[in-house]
Length: 243
Ligand SMILES: [Mg+2]
Image (cartoon, rainbow, N blue to C red):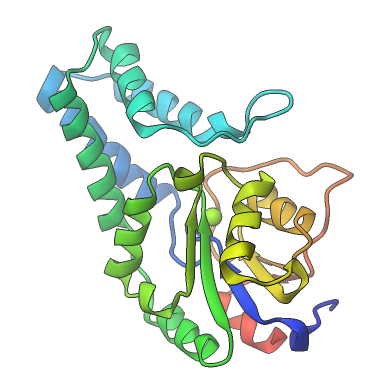
């Protein structure tokens, strides 16, 4: 174990599949709600085609050589979704309705366990806590953090959608370090995504714990030059034994 617990002043968590489960089941619920609103507005839908577009959109920030890590614009990808599936342009009112359903379903699908809430309460007694999440809409994450009860334990919240770039781009990490006003070596990062979280936070100079409690939806191949996390945990509560 390479972690120097005494030096850690703050802990920053990824959100989906780190603090709350967001795997196949939750994504399925969101896909279903989007399919329903599309069918209500435009008629029968090829649900397999919807899944293909959604998977492609989810991976878009990581694509390209080199990848831009540009976060998706929800309005743009939603307009493109309708164009691809129905061959038509959305009106402003239709676009607003689809985006509303997307965000509302996301907020509803996120739930925090009593164990995670209790853990954050204990950790927060001794250290500052933050969330750094890749999601196109920052307000939806903030609503979700309030709904789950996690918000009251957080001192800093940064979303890719607010700054235009996704982890592992350096900007999201620099932004939360600035908000916490701490150097990277004093901020422990905890995340599930090998590329976005583990590589992103290690490159930013932070100590990193890789949580494998839930299975991430997106899988990234490991490269020989990748940086290793400082610890791997199978359950978030194991964090306490490292601190
Ligand atoms: Mg995650």
